Amino acid sequence: MNDFVWLVRREFWENKAIWIIPACIGALLLVAALFGRIEVPMLSAAEHQSTTAGVLLLVAVGVVFWVPMGIYSSWYLLDCLYADRKDRSVLFWKSLPISDRATVLCKLFVGVIAVPAVYFLVADLSALLVAGAVSVRERAVFGDVLWRPELWLQQQVIWLYLIATSALWYLPVAGWLMLVSAWAKRAVILQAVLPPLAIILAERLFLGTHAFGGLLRDRLFGGGYVSLHHPIHWSLSQAGPAGTTPGVWNLPDPQGFLLSPQVWIGALVGAVFIAGAVQLRMRRADT
Image (tube, rainbow, N blue to C red; front, side, top):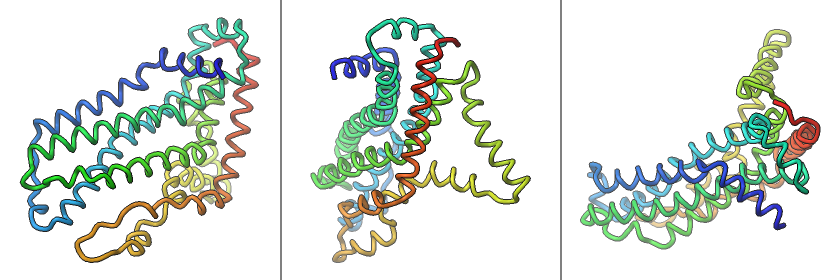
């Protein structure tokens, strides 16, 4: 356990962008909230419209952080094993009593759990600061609606749930990126992208179908549809008295997610890719 903790610390020491990027995004949001122009004429009538504004603020802040988080996590996983071989630091780490399996699993943990957790913490703090700034500047419009405890608690539930489900859903993608990172001698991005593109083109040319392309599209962009209830069905089931805004407590669908064959087939494929990355890490120290 101590070895694993130190390996995680090492990743944070060597990859300061893990916390610098979300910190910069949060700072920009705060500056925009403090000095930017705020126009909310549609919210000046009913109180429930202001409550909706509070929910939208949390969602907007979450999306602003979630997109760069996905991009950075992908880049980190694609570069983590390749960079060790490129700068020859892999030779130093191999000289220590730390297994290659532990190293690969640590990098996987950082890419799919630790990085999203850091973005979550910074997004949470940024949402609080932005809400405070907007409430002070536009108190006549918003009042105290942005400080309702249930809004913040809902944000925590959704973020933590999405981090857990996304880690499992995107395991085959993470495994593939790490496999390429352990294999490639150069041009890691091309070697990660070209094989799937070649399969898509070959299937289209020789079979006239696009099953692999559809499967890849669903894997890259379908995590939310599998782990969450359909937004329309959820909003209808949560409809309450006039002037209220539905909560998000029933939006997660853990039962449907865990019972989905797509989840576990993808996890098995991801485990195979990760095992391959471990074997390559054990056998290769060259660039």
